[in-house]
Image (cartoon, rainbow, N blue to C red; front, side, top):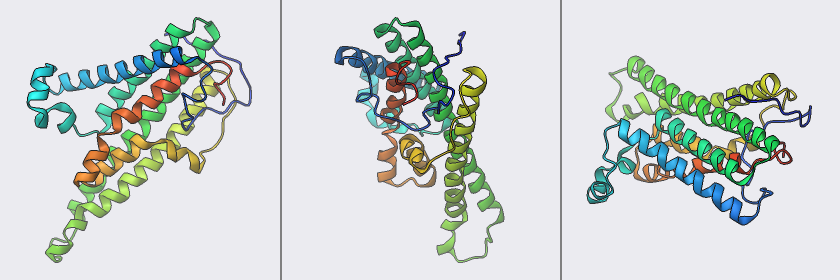
Length: 248
């Protein structure tokens, strides 16, 4: 895909968090519904691709007949499914944006937003998942096996929790740096802005995944099932981005 520079504003700051893609959209309801539908289709396509790769049946009859063992119930939302579903969301939103808007400059803005959203989805998840695994490994390796049995839970839970949350913050900061570089080098935009505390409120999917890495408790499990729905925000932002609202 050839992406041309968009010289909107030399002081442009990439959207590191999420705005409200519905309320901030310049499009009418019909266009917004179109983007929402293509985004949902992209998310479903991403889930289907990952489910097929993992060996789950895509036959609706089989899925609902044995729902307890279906992909949606069994999948652990770590980096691979989140990145796959996130890509589906962004590409679905991009497709919807192209359908509702033929303006070349607006389409360029949507392509830029796709890259930024994928950066914002991928890095925090990768850091969170792999640092959580490292924390668990270190906990198992260095914990004193002679300590009382009731303290054994801390052998993996405490370092895993610390590493997972550290990974989330490291990933969010890294995504910010790379998003700024994308805008500066590829799109000839300004240097952007540093991470702000409010940016973390946008990462519902990341917090769900971090919680799922730390605990297998039932409430955490069910909260993690919200990840595909949270990822729809990115696709809707892509599809509703225009030249005018790209730096809002």
